[in-house]
Length: 470
Image (cartoon, rainbow, N blue to C red):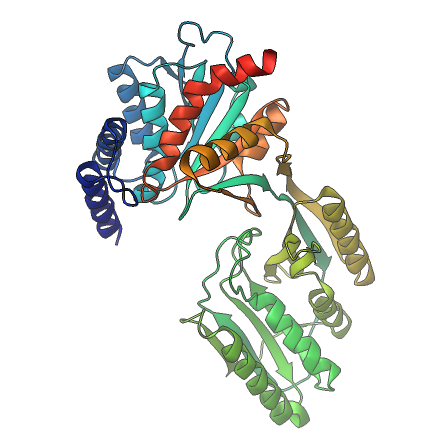
């Protein structure tokens, strides 16, 4: 599939270099050169570094490329690459700009569009203020390169993070996150009910819980709610274990609970399960093509969680916030949370949850709610980790200039959006609060308009600075 994407993009770029950009009748000479140069860089990236996760190969390629193009380059001990160019004559007082791309992750055919764009701009823009391009290491979305980057490399007026997306957009904010561990010492006893079953939901799509679009069933929450509902309807249940999830920041791809049922409740419990499985299929079978939701008889385990503790475990899951927590008046999601993992295999209960919010006060409110829920169920509540909120004011001069540039020169109104994913922009803003920061998506199918607009922005930034001072 990756080869097909790469081949298609190459054909697209070749076509545009001869016939004009996809949505234009013809290209100017500048556009033809831009297309040819960007295509060459992109294709060389694919050839020299076919695996985008091979960060050593990428580091070596970027350093070699910079030397070949007479661009000062350095690196740090955190696998970051830094390219810098001094301001050109008469642009010494112009605003300085940093372009930043992540390396070490993603799909080559997508990620390399942003990298090729940054390399083209630092090489080809002829008149400019100080320009720096940062390539920061980001493997497994750990953002270690950005976190460990010296703040000295962020001494600039503007920073534009370049990513890949289906259409041109500006990301102007990212949610802050809080990660929690809920734990409880469990008491165990010999089982008293004779019929043991394993309830499992498996083979879900999963993915980052920062992606809110679409349907994302949480098997931990679904099984927990089913058991709590069955119990409230009079089914006598003993809980022999509950495990699921793979990461605090991801939707679980599976969960399994072991339960024991009394003789008189087996038929009723089976009926309740059939109803729950049917509702799950109606809601998710189109988006979760490979899922299984099963109730399987198993040998009875030697021990089960005490009745009092199992009641508290199910109560915790039933009352816990999972999914969208708060929306604005116009329907924009502001806060959400996700139960990431549950474990009882150690003999104790451990549940991890990740809350995300674009508003710090709501993130604090969620923390207080978690505390109340845990307190009611005699569960310990510990904060594991956090990540800062980042947002751009609508009056931000960088956002205003680029928005006006696209509207006036390209007749394009660029969508501004927030993300619930963690961003390097939030890290950079913490390191330098004075930075004007924006994230901009790149996609070569958009006529290479984004690159041309950034070229124009960098060349005209002196005029903007002069206007501001006059």
